[in-house]
Image (cartoon, rainbow, N blue to C red; front, side, top):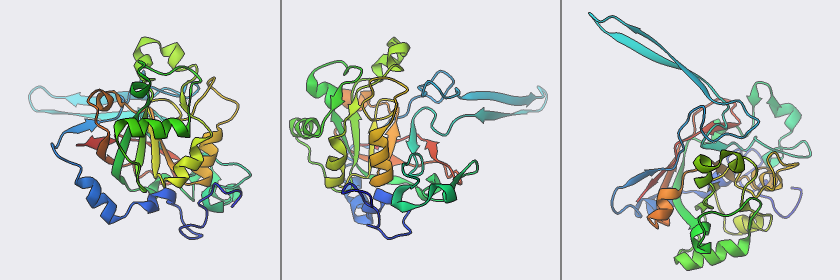
Length: 286
């Protein structure tokens, strides 16, 4: 451990799942009880070349091979080239680090190479299923969207939760609506220039509440004055020190519009061996 903000060793010296350990079968059963109507919301943005993408990354590329015999039948097959952090995605616990150590103290030089990660890779996350809580920060502030560089503090999270009459429980998945995704179609340049997001008062809040994962409707969850930033301090602490997962470029608009604040949340990363992240299609079921 390097500081008090740490979950290293909490689930044993060989642990590679981090905060996912907080979700028990009983918590999943309790989350399933939140389903009343059976309505399913997809929280993913379209996975396409012009979808949301960190500006310096290559765009997702797809072509389709096909053959057709009008007198008989045919076939079609997609070929896709993409970053694992394309569109709506999840960060593995080997995505970022500092001081040459990954989450739980694994040595970077031993476990990260051009072949991927041999510790904390995305294959250690078969699924995240549990109680999801949406905090509609934009709605709470009564704005269409927050602004570039506008921070969301721990006090903001508490106040928004109180206004929505929801409690945060250990093992929850936290979803933060900033309204930023509204700019994706309206003003792509501004969307890619920076973002509102969680500030550095929030990691200790996430630790104290035993949050499993945090998702937001922006590139990086954390507040950024500019993209690319000099550093990603929130990423470093939350992923490397706390073992909490980040879900980025979520589409939370319909949940917020419908004022759905508690959900059964389901996300299943691709079982990409040694992967440092994965595109996902998170589901909210109510």
